[in-house]
Amino acid sequence: MTVTIVGSQLGDEGKGGVVDLYGDAADVVARYQGGDNAGHTVVYDGEKYKLSLVPSGAVRGKVGVLGNGCVVNPETLFSEIDGLRERGLEPDVRVAERAHAILPYHCVLDGIEEDAKDGLAAGTTKRGIGPTYEDKAGRRGVRIGDLLDPETLRTRLEYVVPQKQALAEEVFGIETGEEFDVEYLYDTCLEYGERLAEEEMTVDAGTFLQERIDAGENVMLEGAQGTSIDIDHGVYPYVTSSNPTAGGACVGTGLGPTVVGSGDVIGIVKAYLSRVGTGPLPTELGGVEGQTPAYEGGDDSPEEELATYIRNEGGEYGTVTGRPRRVGWLDMPMLRHAARASGFTGLAINHIDVLAGLEEVEVGHAYEFDGEEIFTVPPTTEKWGRCEAIYRTFEGWDEVDWRAVAEEGYDAIPDNAQTYLEYIADELDTPIYAIGVGPAREETIVLENPFDA
Ligand code: GDP
Ligand code: IMO
Ligand code: MG
Image (cartoon, rainbow, N blue to C red; front, side, top):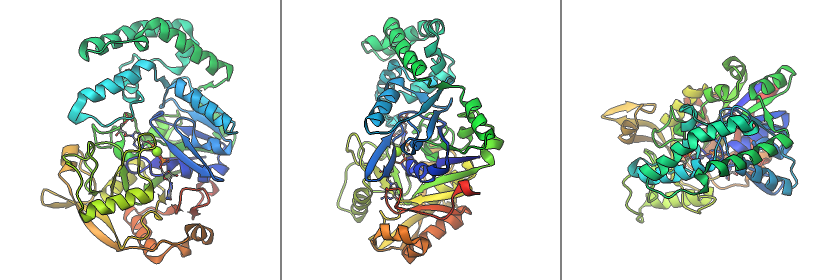
Protein backbone atom coordinates (compact mmCIF):
# COMPACT_ATOMS: atom_id res chain seq x y z
CA MET A 1 0.00 0.00 0.00
CA THR A 2 0.95 3.63 -0.29
CA VAL A 3 0.79 6.61 2.08
CA THR A 4 1.12 10.05 0.52
CA ILE A 5 2.48 13.03 2.42
CA VAL A 6 1.37 16.43 1.09
CA GLY A 7 2.23 19.96 2.25
CA SER A 8 -1.05 21.77 2.81
CA GLN A 9 0.24 25.33 2.94
CA LEU A 10 3.39 27.03 1.65
CA GLY A 11 6.11 24.44 2.23
CA ASP A 12 8.15 23.78 5.39
CA GLU A 13 5.15 22.34 7.26
CA GLY A 14 7.29 19.52 8.67
CA LYS A 15 6.80 16.92 5.93
CA GLY A 16 10.24 15.38 6.45
CA GLY A 17 9.50 14.78 10.12
CA VAL A 18 6.22 13.02 9.32
CA VAL A 19 7.89 10.83 6.69
CA ASP A 20 10.40 9.86 9.35
CA LEU A 21 7.68 9.34 11.96
CA TYR A 22 5.76 6.81 9.88
CA GLY A 23 8.87 5.59 8.06
CA ASP A 24 9.41 2.56 10.25
CA ALA A 25 6.65 0.63 8.48
CA ALA A 26 7.67 1.83 5.02
CA ASP A 27 9.97 -0.15 2.76
CA VAL A 28 10.45 2.53 0.14
CA VAL A 29 10.12 6.32 0.26
CA ALA A 30 9.64 8.07 -3.08
CA ARG A 31 9.68 11.75 -3.93
CA TYR A 32 7.28 12.61 -6.77
CA GLN A 33 8.05 16.21 -7.70
CA GLY A 34 10.38 19.11 -7.10
CA GLY A 35 14.10 18.86 -6.66
CA ASP A 36 16.74 20.36 -4.41
CA ASN A 37 14.52 23.38 -3.79
CA ALA A 38 13.17 21.24 -0.92
CA GLY A 39 14.70 21.16 2.54
CA HIS A 40 13.19 18.41 4.69
CA THR A 41 14.32 18.10 8.28
CA VAL A 42 14.53 14.94 10.32
CA VAL A 43 15.59 15.21 13.95
CA TYR A 44 16.44 11.94 15.61
CA ASP A 45 18.71 10.86 18.42
CA GLY A 46 20.14 14.35 18.84
CA GLU A 47 21.08 14.51 15.17
CA LYS A 48 19.52 16.89 12.66
CA TYR A 49 19.40 15.92 9.00
CA LYS A 50 18.43 18.46 6.35
CA LEU A 51 17.54 16.60 3.16
CA SER A 52 17.07 18.22 -0.22
CA LEU A 53 16.93 15.39 -2.72
CA VAL A 54 17.53 12.20 -0.80
CA PRO A 55 14.07 11.03 0.39
CA SER A 56 13.63 11.41 4.15
CA GLY A 57 13.36 7.64 4.70
CA ALA A 58 17.17 7.53 4.40
CA VAL A 59 17.52 8.29 8.10
CA ARG A 60 15.78 4.98 8.82
CA GLY A 61 17.77 3.20 6.11
CA LYS A 62 14.84 2.92 3.69
CA VAL A 63 15.25 2.72 -0.07
CA GLY A 64 14.66 6.13 -1.66
CA VAL A 65 13.29 6.79 -5.13
CA LEU A 66 13.30 10.04 -7.07
CA GLY A 67 10.30 9.64 -9.34
CA ASN A 68 9.91 10.78 -12.94
CA GLY A 69 8.13 13.94 -11.73
CA CYS A 70 11.28 15.16 -9.99
CA VAL A 71 13.97 17.36 -11.46
CA VAL A 72 17.34 16.08 -10.36
CA ASN A 73 20.62 17.92 -10.19
CA PRO A 74 23.14 15.04 -10.14
CA GLU A 75 25.80 17.31 -8.69
CA THR A 76 23.80 18.13 -5.56
CA LEU A 77 22.43 14.60 -5.31
CA PHE A 78 25.92 13.13 -5.20
CA SER A 79 27.20 15.65 -2.69
CA GLU A 80 24.18 15.04 -0.46
CA ILE A 81 24.71 11.27 -0.62
CA ASP A 82 28.42 11.71 0.15
CA GLY A 83 27.60 13.99 3.10
CA LEU A 84 25.14 11.47 4.54
CA ARG A 85 27.68 8.66 4.11
CA GLU A 86 30.18 10.70 6.09
CA ARG A 87 27.59 10.89 8.85
CA GLY A 88 27.25 7.14 8.94
CA LEU A 89 24.08 6.64 6.91
CA GLU A 90 23.91 4.41 3.86
CA PRO A 91 21.50 6.13 1.49
CA ASP A 92 20.18 3.77 -1.19
CA VAL A 93 18.72 6.14 -3.77
CA ARG A 94 17.23 5.17 -7.14
CA VAL A 95 16.54 7.78 -9.77
CA ALA A 96 13.86 7.52 -12.44
CA GLU A 97 15.33 7.40 -15.93
CA ARG A 98 12.39 9.56 -16.94
CA ALA A 99 13.22 12.31 -14.44
CA HIS A 100 14.69 15.45 -15.95
CA ALA A 101 18.23 16.53 -15.16
CA ILE A 102 18.97 20.00 -13.84
CA LEU A 103 22.09 21.09 -15.69
CA PRO A 104 24.41 24.03 -14.95
CA TYR A 105 22.72 26.35 -17.48
CA HIS A 106 19.35 25.88 -15.75
CA CYS A 107 20.78 27.28 -12.52
CA VAL A 108 22.29 30.29 -14.30
CA LEU A 109 19.02 30.99 -16.12
CA ASP A 110 16.97 30.70 -12.90
CA GLY A 111 19.07 33.49 -11.41
CA ILE A 112 18.95 35.87 -14.35
CA GLU A 113 15.25 35.29 -15.10
CA GLU A 114 14.35 36.04 -11.50
CA ASP A 115 16.34 39.27 -11.60
CA ALA A 116 14.64 40.28 -14.82
CA LYS A 117 11.13 39.51 -13.55
CA ASP A 118 11.11 42.26 -10.97
CA GLY A 119 7.49 42.46 -9.69
CA LEU A 120 6.65 38.94 -10.89
CA ALA A 121 9.57 37.17 -9.24
CA ALA A 122 8.59 34.33 -6.90
CA GLY A 123 11.84 34.58 -4.96
CA THR A 124 12.97 31.18 -6.21
CA THR A 125 15.62 29.04 -4.60
CA LYS A 126 17.74 29.57 -7.76
CA ARG A 127 18.31 25.84 -8.07
CA GLY A 128 17.22 25.76 -11.71
CA ILE A 129 13.84 24.21 -10.93
CA GLY A 130 11.66 26.43 -13.15
CA PRO A 131 13.97 26.41 -16.19
CA THR A 132 14.25 22.60 -16.04
CA TYR A 133 10.48 22.07 -15.91
CA GLU A 134 10.18 24.61 -18.75
CA ASP A 135 12.48 22.49 -20.88
CA LYS A 136 10.55 19.36 -19.94
CA ALA A 137 7.28 20.92 -21.11
CA GLY A 138 9.06 22.40 -24.14
CA ARG A 139 10.29 18.91 -25.07
CA ARG A 140 13.91 19.95 -25.08
CA GLY A 141 15.00 18.55 -21.73
CA VAL A 142 17.78 16.11 -20.90
CA ARG A 143 16.52 13.16 -18.89
CA ILE A 144 18.43 11.07 -16.39
CA GLY A 145 18.33 8.11 -18.79
CA ASP A 146 20.06 10.25 -21.44
CA LEU A 147 23.09 10.68 -19.18
CA LEU A 148 23.86 6.99 -19.68
CA ASP A 149 23.51 7.11 -23.45
CA PRO A 150 26.37 9.16 -25.02
CA GLU A 151 24.84 9.39 -28.48
CA THR A 152 21.44 10.61 -27.33
CA LEU A 153 23.07 12.92 -24.85
CA ARG A 154 25.15 14.62 -27.54
CA THR A 155 22.13 15.03 -29.81
CA ARG A 156 20.09 16.59 -27.00
CA LEU A 157 22.83 18.96 -25.89
CA GLU A 158 23.71 20.05 -29.42
CA TYR A 159 20.07 20.98 -29.94
CA VAL A 160 19.30 22.74 -26.69
CA VAL A 161 22.50 24.42 -25.51
CA PRO A 162 22.90 26.93 -28.38
CA GLN A 163 19.31 28.03 -27.75
CA LYS A 164 20.02 28.56 -24.07
CA GLN A 165 23.20 30.42 -24.86
CA ALA A 166 21.39 32.73 -27.27
CA LEU A 167 18.72 33.34 -24.63
CA ALA A 168 21.29 34.21 -21.99
CA GLU A 169 23.44 36.38 -24.24
CA GLU A 170 20.98 38.01 -26.59
CA VAL A 171 17.86 38.36 -24.46
CA PHE A 172 19.38 38.79 -21.02
CA GLY A 173 22.68 40.28 -22.18
CA ILE A 174 25.02 38.24 -19.99
CA GLU A 175 28.37 36.79 -20.84
CA THR A 176 28.21 33.00 -20.75
CA GLY A 177 30.84 30.55 -19.57
CA GLU A 178 31.31 26.78 -19.39
CA GLU A 179 27.70 26.32 -18.22
CA PHE A 180 26.69 26.94 -21.85
CA ASP A 181 29.52 25.02 -23.52
CA VAL A 182 28.42 21.80 -25.24
CA GLU A 183 31.73 19.98 -24.81
CA TYR A 184 32.02 20.87 -21.14
CA LEU A 185 28.42 19.83 -20.51
CA TYR A 186 28.83 16.61 -22.47
CA ASP A 187 31.85 15.57 -20.41
CA THR A 188 30.18 16.59 -17.15
CA CYS A 189 26.98 14.72 -18.00
CA LEU A 190 28.91 11.59 -18.94
CA GLU A 191 30.62 11.71 -15.55
CA TYR A 192 27.22 11.96 -13.87
CA GLY A 193 26.04 9.02 -15.96
CA GLU A 194 29.07 6.94 -15.03
CA ARG A 195 28.43 7.35 -11.32
CA LEU A 196 24.72 6.66 -11.72
CA ALA A 197 25.58 3.46 -13.62
CA GLU A 198 28.37 2.40 -11.25
CA GLU A 199 26.09 2.67 -8.25
CA GLU A 200 23.17 1.12 -10.17
CA MET A 201 20.99 4.05 -9.29
CA THR A 202 18.73 4.37 -12.31
CA VAL A 203 15.34 2.69 -12.48
CA ASP A 204 12.04 2.66 -14.31
CA ALA A 205 10.36 4.17 -11.26
CA GLY A 206 6.74 3.21 -11.94
CA THR A 207 7.59 -0.44 -12.55
CA PHE A 208 10.01 -0.52 -9.61
CA LEU A 209 7.41 0.87 -7.21
CA GLN A 210 4.52 -1.21 -8.49
CA GLU A 211 6.57 -4.39 -8.14
CA ARG A 212 7.34 -3.52 -4.52
CA ILE A 213 3.66 -2.86 -3.83
CA ASP A 214 2.64 -6.13 -5.54
CA ALA A 215 5.14 -7.92 -3.28
CA GLY A 216 3.25 -6.56 -0.28
CA GLU A 217 5.68 -3.79 0.61
CA ASN A 218 4.76 -0.33 1.89
CA VAL A 219 5.59 2.74 -0.14
CA MET A 220 5.55 6.27 1.20
CA LEU A 221 5.17 9.08 -1.33
CA GLU A 222 6.93 12.19 -0.03
CA GLY A 223 5.64 15.46 -1.42
CA ALA A 224 7.84 18.52 -1.44
CA GLN A 225 6.73 22.19 -1.25
CA GLY A 226 3.03 22.80 -0.53
CA THR A 227 -0.43 23.28 -2.03
CA SER A 228 -0.37 27.07 -2.14
CA ILE A 229 2.83 27.03 -4.18
CA ASP A 230 1.54 24.30 -6.53
CA ILE A 231 1.80 25.51 -10.13
CA ASP A 232 -1.91 24.80 -10.75
CA HIS A 233 -3.50 25.29 -7.36
CA GLY A 234 -1.22 27.89 -5.82
CA VAL A 235 -0.65 31.58 -5.84
CA TYR A 236 0.46 31.76 -9.48
CA PRO A 237 2.95 33.12 -10.59
CA TYR A 238 4.58 33.14 -7.13
CA VAL A 239 4.73 29.35 -7.15
CA THR A 240 7.08 26.50 -7.82
CA SER A 241 6.91 24.71 -11.17
CA SER A 242 5.46 21.35 -10.14
CA ASN A 243 2.40 19.75 -8.48
CA PRO A 244 2.92 19.06 -4.76
CA THR A 245 -0.79 18.15 -4.51
CA ALA A 246 -1.70 14.46 -4.38
CA GLY A 247 -2.41 14.21 -8.13
CA GLY A 248 1.30 14.84 -8.58
CA ALA A 249 2.02 11.64 -6.68
CA CYS A 250 0.46 9.63 -9.53
CA VAL A 251 2.00 11.31 -12.55
CA GLY A 252 5.27 11.85 -10.71
CA THR A 253 5.81 8.18 -9.84
CA GLY A 254 4.01 6.21 -12.52
CA LEU A 255 1.61 4.66 -10.01
CA GLY A 256 -2.05 4.88 -10.97
CA PRO A 257 -4.56 7.15 -9.17
CA THR A 258 -6.39 4.06 -7.93
CA VAL A 259 -3.20 2.79 -6.31
CA VAL A 260 -2.41 6.11 -4.65
CA GLY A 261 -6.08 6.64 -3.78
CA SER A 262 -6.40 3.29 -2.07
CA GLY A 263 -3.95 4.48 0.58
CA ASP A 264 -4.05 7.46 2.92
CA VAL A 265 -3.27 10.99 1.77
CA ILE A 266 -2.03 12.96 4.76
CA GLY A 267 -2.07 16.74 4.74
CA ILE A 268 0.76 18.24 6.76
CA VAL A 269 -0.32 21.42 8.52
CA LYS A 270 1.83 23.95 10.32
CA ALA A 271 -0.19 25.48 13.18
CA TYR A 272 0.56 28.95 11.76
CA LEU A 273 1.92 30.11 8.40
CA SER A 274 5.46 30.62 7.22
CA ARG A 275 6.40 31.76 3.76
CA VAL A 276 9.65 32.11 1.87
CA GLY A 277 8.81 34.17 -1.17
CA THR A 278 6.42 36.74 -2.51
CA GLY A 279 2.67 36.90 -3.19
CA PRO A 280 -0.44 37.62 -1.11
CA LEU A 281 -0.87 36.24 2.40
CA PRO A 282 -4.10 37.57 3.95
CA THR A 283 -3.28 36.42 7.51
CA GLU A 284 0.30 37.73 7.48
CA LEU A 285 1.60 39.33 10.65
CA GLY A 286 3.89 42.29 10.05
CA GLY A 287 6.04 41.79 7.00
CA VAL A 288 9.42 41.13 5.48
CA GLU A 289 11.02 43.61 3.15
CA GLY A 290 11.39 42.39 -0.41
CA GLN A 291 8.79 39.65 0.05
CA THR A 292 5.62 41.12 1.56
CA PRO A 293 3.80 43.04 -1.17
CA ALA A 294 3.93 46.84 -0.67
CA TYR A 295 5.76 46.49 2.65
CA GLU A 296 7.95 49.40 3.59
CA GLY A 297 9.70 48.38 6.73
CA GLY A 298 8.80 47.41 10.24
CA ASP A 299 7.41 49.41 13.11
CA ASP A 300 6.76 48.66 16.77
CA SER A 301 3.16 47.56 16.28
CA PRO A 302 1.82 44.63 18.31
CA GLU A 303 1.53 42.74 15.00
CA GLU A 304 5.23 43.10 14.31
CA GLU A 305 5.97 42.00 17.86
CA LEU A 306 3.82 38.92 17.44
CA ALA A 307 5.49 38.15 14.13
CA THR A 308 8.91 38.40 15.75
CA TYR A 309 7.78 36.19 18.65
CA ILE A 310 6.46 33.42 16.38
CA ARG A 311 9.46 33.76 14.06
CA ASN A 312 11.88 33.32 16.95
CA GLU A 313 9.99 30.51 18.65
CA GLY A 314 9.58 28.63 15.36
CA GLY A 315 13.10 29.35 14.11
CA GLU A 316 11.61 30.88 10.98
CA TYR A 317 14.84 32.15 9.49
CA GLY A 318 16.39 30.97 6.23
CA THR A 319 18.78 28.08 6.83
CA VAL A 320 21.31 29.45 4.35
CA THR A 321 20.80 33.21 4.37
CA GLY A 322 19.48 33.69 7.92
CA ARG A 323 16.82 36.00 6.45
CA PRO A 324 13.53 36.22 8.35
CA ARG A 325 10.62 34.30 6.84
CA ARG A 326 7.17 35.79 6.53
CA VAL A 327 4.79 34.51 9.22
CA GLY A 328 1.05 34.66 9.74
CA TRP A 329 -1.91 33.09 11.47
CA LEU A 330 -3.39 29.84 10.24
CA ASP A 331 -5.50 30.41 7.13
CA MET A 332 -8.56 28.13 6.94
CA PRO A 333 -9.59 29.06 3.36
CA MET A 334 -6.10 27.98 2.31
CA LEU A 335 -6.50 24.69 4.18
CA ARG A 336 -10.01 23.98 2.84
CA HIS A 337 -8.62 24.48 -0.65
CA ALA A 338 -5.74 22.09 0.10
CA ALA A 339 -7.98 19.41 1.63
CA ARG A 340 -10.18 19.44 -1.46
CA ALA A 341 -7.37 19.55 -4.02
CA SER A 342 -5.62 16.52 -2.51
CA GLY A 343 -8.54 14.70 -0.87
CA PHE A 344 -6.87 14.42 2.52
CA THR A 345 -7.84 11.37 4.55
CA GLY A 346 -5.80 12.44 7.58
CA LEU A 347 -3.93 15.40 9.01
CA ALA A 348 -0.64 15.84 10.80
CA ILE A 349 -0.63 19.15 12.64
CA ASN A 350 2.81 20.40 13.65
CA HIS A 351 4.28 23.24 15.67
CA ILE A 352 1.55 23.69 18.29
CA ASP A 353 4.41 24.13 20.79
CA VAL A 354 5.56 27.22 18.88
CA LEU A 355 2.31 29.06 19.67
CA ALA A 356 2.50 28.25 23.39
CA GLY A 357 2.76 31.27 25.65
CA LEU A 358 0.52 33.52 23.55
CA GLU A 359 -2.52 34.94 25.29
CA GLU A 360 -4.68 34.48 22.23
CA VAL A 361 -4.27 32.60 19.00
CA GLU A 362 -6.10 33.83 15.94
CA VAL A 363 -7.16 31.97 12.83
CA GLY A 364 -8.29 33.38 9.51
CA HIS A 365 -11.61 31.51 9.46
CA ALA A 366 -12.93 33.05 6.23
CA TYR A 367 -12.18 35.94 3.87
CA GLU A 368 -14.07 39.07 3.06
CA PHE A 369 -13.91 39.52 -0.68
CA ASP A 370 -15.67 42.47 -2.31
CA GLY A 371 -18.14 42.64 0.58
CA GLU A 372 -18.86 38.91 0.56
CA GLU A 373 -17.79 36.22 3.01
CA ILE A 374 -15.96 33.36 1.28
CA PHE A 375 -14.54 30.16 2.73
CA THR A 376 -11.95 29.05 0.21
CA VAL A 377 -9.32 30.80 -1.91
CA PRO A 378 -10.37 32.63 -5.06
CA PRO A 379 -8.86 31.32 -8.30
CA THR A 380 -6.80 34.35 -9.29
CA THR A 381 -3.93 35.70 -7.29
CA GLU A 382 -5.08 39.25 -7.89
CA LYS A 383 -8.40 38.39 -6.22
CA TRP A 384 -6.59 36.57 -3.41
CA GLY A 385 -4.60 39.73 -2.80
CA ARG A 386 -7.86 41.63 -2.25
CA CYS A 387 -9.14 39.21 0.41
CA GLU A 388 -9.21 40.34 4.01
CA ALA A 389 -9.11 37.67 6.69
CA ILE A 390 -12.10 37.32 9.02
CA TYR A 391 -10.62 36.09 12.27
CA ARG A 392 -11.70 33.71 15.01
CA THR A 393 -9.95 34.03 18.31
CA PHE A 394 -8.88 31.09 20.45
CA GLU A 395 -7.59 31.27 23.99
CA GLY A 396 -3.88 30.57 24.14
CA TRP A 397 -2.10 27.76 25.95
CA ASP A 398 0.88 27.77 28.25
CA GLU A 399 4.36 26.55 27.60
CA VAL A 400 4.63 23.03 29.02
CA ASP A 401 7.11 20.17 28.99
CA TRP A 402 6.26 19.01 25.48
CA ARG A 403 8.39 15.87 25.67
CA ALA A 404 6.37 14.75 28.66
CA VAL A 405 3.16 15.61 26.79
CA ALA A 406 4.31 13.55 23.82
CA GLU A 407 4.97 10.62 26.11
CA GLU A 408 1.61 10.86 27.85
CA GLY A 409 -0.45 11.35 24.72
CA TYR A 410 -3.32 13.45 23.44
CA ASP A 411 -5.06 14.06 26.76
CA ALA A 412 -1.92 15.72 28.13
CA ILE A 413 -2.11 18.46 25.47
CA PRO A 414 -3.33 21.70 27.12
CA ASP A 415 -7.13 22.01 26.78
CA ASN A 416 -7.02 25.19 24.70
CA ALA A 417 -4.62 23.61 22.24
CA GLN A 418 -6.99 20.62 21.98
CA THR A 419 -9.82 23.03 21.16
CA TYR A 420 -7.66 24.57 18.44
CA LEU A 421 -6.76 21.17 16.96
CA GLU A 422 -10.34 19.95 17.02
CA TYR A 423 -11.51 23.12 15.27
CA ILE A 424 -9.07 22.42 12.41
CA ALA A 425 -10.13 18.77 12.10
CA ASP A 426 -13.83 19.73 12.16
CA GLU A 427 -13.49 22.48 9.58
CA LEU A 428 -11.64 20.16 7.21
CA ASP A 429 -13.82 17.19 8.10
CA THR A 430 -10.63 15.15 8.36
CA PRO A 431 -9.25 13.23 11.34
CA ILE A 432 -5.95 14.09 12.97
CA TYR A 433 -3.37 11.33 12.63
CA ALA A 434 -0.43 13.02 14.35
CA ILE A 435 0.46 16.14 16.31
CA GLY A 436 3.91 17.67 16.37
CA VAL A 437 4.95 19.29 19.66
CA GLY A 438 8.64 19.67 18.81
CA PRO A 439 11.07 18.90 15.99
CA ALA A 440 12.21 15.44 17.11
CA ARG A 441 10.70 12.08 16.25
CA GLU A 442 9.80 11.50 19.89
CA GLU A 443 8.12 14.92 20.14
CA THR A 444 5.09 13.73 18.24
CA ILE A 445 1.76 12.30 19.35
CA VAL A 446 0.52 9.58 17.05
CA LEU A 447 -3.23 8.97 16.99
CA GLU A 448 -3.30 6.86 13.86
CA ASN A 449 -0.67 5.00 11.88
CA PRO A 450 -1.77 4.89 8.23
CA PHE A 451 0.23 1.71 7.64
CA ASP A 452 -1.75 -0.12 10.33
CA ALA A 453 -4.99 0.12 8.39
P1 GDP B 1 9.43 20.35 5.39
O1 GDP B 1 10.08 21.09 4.27
O2 GDP B 1 7.95 20.33 5.28
O3 GDP B 1 9.98 18.96 5.58
O4 GDP B 1 9.75 21.18 6.71
P2 GDP B 1 11.17 21.82 7.11
O5 GDP B 1 12.06 20.75 7.61
O6 GDP B 1 11.69 22.70 6.03
O7 GDP B 1 10.71 22.82 8.26
C1 GDP B 1 10.11 22.40 9.42
C2 GDP B 1 10.99 22.84 10.62
O8 GDP B 1 10.24 22.72 11.79
C3 GDP B 1 12.18 21.94 10.81
O9 GDP B 1 13.21 22.66 11.42
C4 GDP B 1 11.65 20.85 11.73
O10 GDP B 1 12.65 20.21 12.49
C5 GDP B 1 10.76 21.68 12.62
N1 GDP B 1 9.57 20.99 13.15
C6 GDP B 1 8.82 20.02 12.57
N2 GDP B 1 7.75 19.72 13.36
C7 GDP B 1 7.82 20.54 14.43
C8 GDP B 1 6.99 20.74 15.59
O11 GDP B 1 5.95 20.12 15.79
N3 GDP B 1 7.40 21.71 16.48
C9 GDP B 1 8.54 22.43 16.29
N4 GDP B 1 8.86 23.34 17.20
N5 GDP B 1 9.32 22.27 15.21
C10 GDP B 1 8.97 21.35 14.29
P1 IMO C 1 9.93 22.21 1.12
O1 IMO C 1 9.82 20.90 0.37
C1 IMO C 1 9.14 26.52 1.09
C2 IMO C 1 9.34 28.50 -2.86
C3 IMO C 1 10.44 29.50 -3.12
C4 IMO C 1 9.76 30.41 -4.14
C5 IMO C 1 8.93 29.45 -4.96
C6 IMO C 1 9.55 29.01 -6.25
O2 IMO C 1 11.12 22.29 2.00
O3 IMO C 1 8.65 22.53 1.81
P2 IMO C 1 11.54 27.35 -6.88
O4 IMO C 1 12.98 27.36 -6.50
O5 IMO C 1 10.81 26.12 -6.48
O6 IMO C 1 11.32 27.68 -8.33
O7 IMO C 1 10.89 28.58 -6.04
O8 IMO C 1 8.70 28.32 -4.12
N1 IMO C 1 9.79 27.16 -2.39
C7 IMO C 1 9.65 26.70 -1.15
N2 IMO C 1 9.18 27.28 -0.02
N3 IMO C 1 9.51 25.21 1.11
C8 IMO C 1 9.95 24.60 0.00
O9 IMO C 1 10.20 23.27 -0.05
C9 IMO C 1 10.07 25.35 -1.19
N4 IMO C 1 10.48 25.07 -2.44
C10 IMO C 1 10.30 26.18 -3.16
O10 IMO C 1 10.80 30.18 -1.95
O11 IMO C 1 8.87 31.30 -3.52
MG1 MG D 1 11.44 22.65 3.97
